[in-house]
Amino acid sequence: MEKLLKTLGPVCAIIGAQWGDEGKGKAIDMLAEHYDVIARAAGGANAGHTIVVKGKKHVFHLLPSGALHPNTTVIVGSGMVLHLPTVLEEIRTLEEAGIDVLPRLFISEEAHILFEFHKDIDAAMEELRAARSGKGIGTTRRGIGPAYMDKAARRGIRMGSLKDDLTKELEARVEQVKHAYGVTVDVALEQKHLAEARKVLAGRVTNTVALLHRLLKEGKTILIEGAQATLLDIDHGTYPYVTSSSTTVAGALQGLGLPPRRLTSCIGVAKAYCTRVGEGEFLTEVTGETGDRLRERGGEYGATTGRPRRCGWLHLPDLRFSADINGYTQWNITKLDVLDEEETIPVGVGVNADGSVKFENLPGWKASTQGVTSFGKLPKNAQGYLTFIEKQTGVPVALTGTGQGREAMIVRE
Ligand code: GDP
Ligand code: IMO
Ligand code: MG
Image (cartoon, rainbow, N blue to C red; front, side):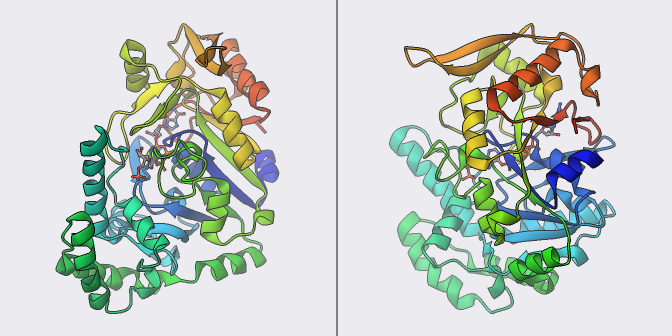
C-alpha cells in the first residue's frame, strides 16, 4: 500500500468509468484513511455510494464516503446540488453510528439548493417524456435535472443564501413553476426544510475553494470522490440518457475549483462486467438467465432507488474512451468475485463489419476469489482476465475488488 500511495501522490481522483455504481464508495473508503481531505464535487442525491464495514452497510448520497474515517476533513463542493433534508438525515445516521461529521464538514457557499419542487418537476418531466415517446430517461427522480436547469438559467438559490430569508425568492417561483410544469411549489414546506437546515448547517457553509487552496498550501492531501460516471456525463456520455452534471475528472476539478496541474493521479473504477440503471444504449447488455445470474450474484439493485440494474459484459471500447477522457493512471476493477461461476466470460472488444459488438470469449476460473487479497492467490484465468484488461486499455490494474467488505481488495503496488 505504501508504494501505491506514493504513486498516487497528494491529489487523487476516483472516477466512475461506466454508467455508475462501479464501487467508487468502497475505493474511497479504503483510501480515505490515508488522505487528509475527502471532497465531492458534483451531482446530488442521485448518487448512492455503498460501504460495508464489518458486515454493516452504509450508503452515502450527498456526503463524501470518506466521512466514516474520523480524521478526514469532508468537503461538499461547489458543483453539487443539495437536497437539505437528505444532508441532515445523513449527518444524523452517521451520528447514530457514533461518527461525528459536523465539526469537520465544510459545504460550499456556491453549491445549489435542491428543493422539493425540483423533485416534483423531475417526475413531471419524466411522465411527459413517457407520454410523448413511450419512455422517460429513467432518472432517479431526485430533482437533479431541474436543479441544474435553474443553475444554468441563473435563477438557482445557493447555499450562501441559506442564512437569508428566502420567502420572496420562493414565492416568485410559484407561478413560473406552475405555468411551465403544472407543479405546485409548497412554500411552507420548503421554508420548514430551510429553517431546519439553517439551524444545523449555517455555520458549516463556507468558501470551500479558498479552504481547499489553504489546505493544499499546508501540504494536506486530497482525495476527490467522483459521482455518477463517465458514460453518464452531460457532454461525453450517452446523451440524452445521461445525468445533468459533468461527471469526468475535469468536471470534478471544476466543481471544486482545483487547477488540473494539482492532480497527481486518477483512478478509473470499472466493474469486471457492466451494469446500467435507467434507459439508454447498452451494447453488451445480456437479458434472460445470464443477466439474472449476474444481477443476483452482484446484488445489482440500485443503492438510491432500489431499481434492478441492467447487467451485461465488459465493453473495452468504453473503458478506452473513459481512460482517454479522464487520463486514468490506474484501474480499480471491482466485483471480480461476481464472475467466479462463469464458464466463459465474453468481453466486447470492438465492432464487427455489420456494426454489431465483436466479442472475445475469455475462459472463466470456476473457483472462488471471494475475499482474496493478493494477485498471486487468484486463479490463473482470473489473473489472465485482469492482464487482458490492462493490455487492451494500456492502464495498469492497481486495485481489484473481491467482495463487498472494506478489506476484500487486491492492492498491486
Ligand atoms: P458506487 O455508486 O460506485 O459507489 O457503487 P454502489 O455502492 O452504488 O454499488 C456498488 C455495489 O457493489 C455495492 O453494493 C458495494 O457494496 C458492492 N461492491 C463493491 N465492490 C465490490 C466487490 O469487489 N465485490 C462485490 N461482490 N461487491 C462489491
Ligand atoms: P453513483 O454515484 C448509477 C442515472 C439514472 C438515469 C440517469 C439520469 O451511485 O454511481 P438523474 O437522476 O441523474 O437525472 O438520472 O443517470 N444515474 C446513475 N446511475 N449510479 C449513479 O450514481 C447515478 N446517478 C444518476 O439512473 O439513468
Ligand atoms: Mg451508486
